[in-house]
Length: 121
Image (tube, rainbow, N blue to C red):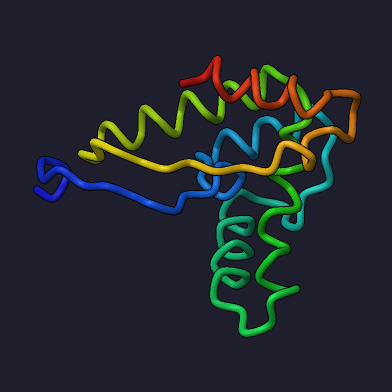
């Protein structure tokens, strides 16, 4: 029922707004070490981090997605899926943010990372 009510989001982090199964698949395709052996365990890890009182523990939930978002294809895919999910949930406006400098570990430039996000919109 709430999906039909128009909504907005003024502060949404791209690297924290992923489909769980997408990150799980990307991590395995890219040989990224996961903090859990099952997707259910990973979901529990994310919940634990989200409720952490220590900021360093909280930020650990971004480690795996950031490791998986080091190529244009993955960044574009996660952007496309986020926008699709927002539309399906009734969002008519969202301010999605990300830090391009965090997506340069495997050779992308900040401009490349930004272009990948724009391709996914």
